[in-house]
Image (cartoon, rainbow, N blue to C red; front, side, top):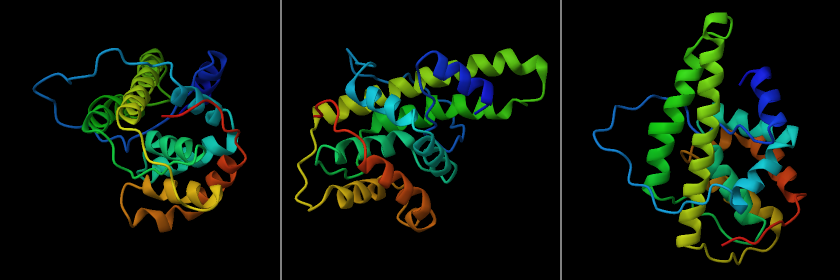
Length: 201
């Protein structure tokens, strides 16, 4: 993410959240079947905006993304933990497919364009804007799934432990947790000091 893009996003009051390794998938034969009446401006999105305003949280989320983690899953995990709910890591197939085929494809295209080439700058910025909107819809899909199937309350003692367990449940693979320990520890510490915020499903 370029410095210019960071300034542009924060000036407009939005947030950039990279949520896929950036591998361009094969072209789908049919369009995605999305739920009707999605709510892009929902409590999960507003929580994401607040988290992204914290430089440390942003840095650690992007570092985890470089290791193959999904920031959407990380945000869901932290958001639920602050309300005393467990995150299992299970998500609706539509969320995963949107991430792979739309958000990830746009991110891959943006990263493929050379930053130093002035002729590509306008195209790169345009794709970055589309990527941001794709991320917003991805979070809306995640919100829809969490509302449709509300997670159960956790019986775990202590918010700090629940935050860490939820974050680990967001791992792309079980073996990913060990290498991500520094970022997970720092992010868990940041989330532990976050206000509870809006009601969750």
